[in-house]
Length: 313
Image 1 (cartoon, helix red, strand yellow):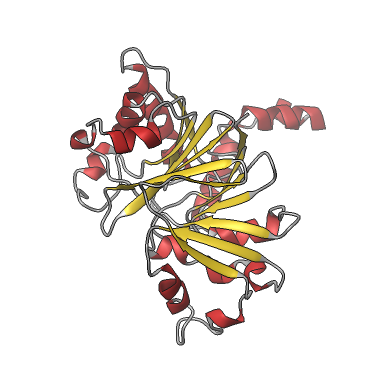
Image 2 (image 1 turned 90 degrees about the vertical axis):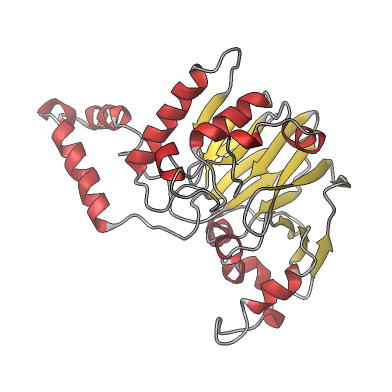
């Protein structure tokens, strides 16, 4: 399976500001020497030496992750503003059939759906899955006047809604899908996809703390021995202490959780909209150091960034 990140921010879209662009340019210029511009190859080598937070950006779109199964079946997890970029730059399935899963219905996870170009294609087919029985009602509601210029009925007529149960895994193509309810205001569901013995877990909008580090069968079925885990890690521990109950995790608690369940690869996700690229990469380093201090584990820690694609063979 292939996993592609189209939106990685939490709470609200947060495009990079002109001031932050200027700051990046100033820092690059301070690092520049005459030898770095002597030739095209010297320039290319200089660019390779730049810190990741200067060369590019983590991205500012809200949650949207695309998974492509080995048979080409398309799965989309959440329809934040990143789903608009998916439509512009992604590769649609040959049969124009998308399976969309919602973790929950907060604004930053549904706001992009009316901007998903393919939703307006008459021949496109959508199967939308969620444990929330009224999901159709709420997706329609965000397009009602005066919130949007056209209503839900102008979309493809081939949109089908399915209410799923956390206790009942099911299959789509070669993929087995399961979910579990997690701690978040109003609830949020984490999803497990299994294909050819590999486990991928999407777990955004999850509030983890020391009390969460309790092993239960329901959680074990989703997280234990996952090959890839996308996990809410919105805050530093200091900032989390002032936002307990908001429904998001400090990165260190996310790392403890991943280590407890023997996860192989963790991708920090649902980034705080106020955090700069530089701060997010510093959090990545801190998360790696935290994991290194946990005995007898080998969790690989990564930063979810817009445009990143990984393969899970």
